[in-house]
Image 1 (tube, rainbow, N blue to C red):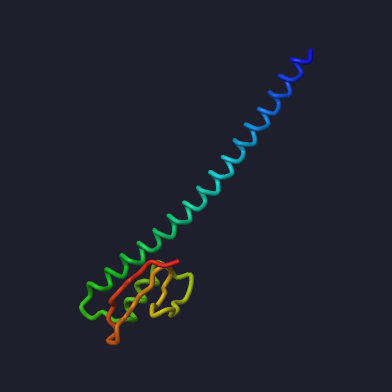
Image 2 (image 1 turned 30 degrees about the vertical axis):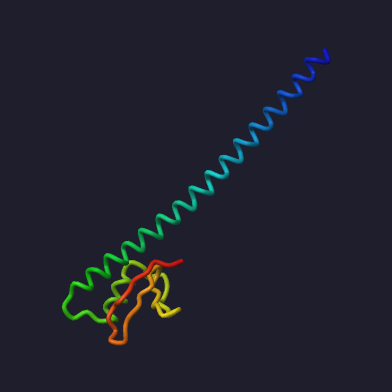
Length: 109
């Protein structure tokens, strides 16, 4: 009798432990999936911005304003702002020289 009670208690603890482990794994997978989706969306937006900038650069009379407008085409959520020498439009940082020519593009955040 005592032996069967001990076995039942061990089985109950094993069942609760494995269920807790599965719940943790499910929660962790959900959080990871959410971060992965956000990262994918941000990279797609940055790619869209980059492609629009490339299209704008193929024009013969490209200006800073046209490049910024092209970058905003794919990302119209916020206004561009300057920080650390870059003009940030969405996820991309655009660096212009003194002649307003595009010299560098970086992905941020």
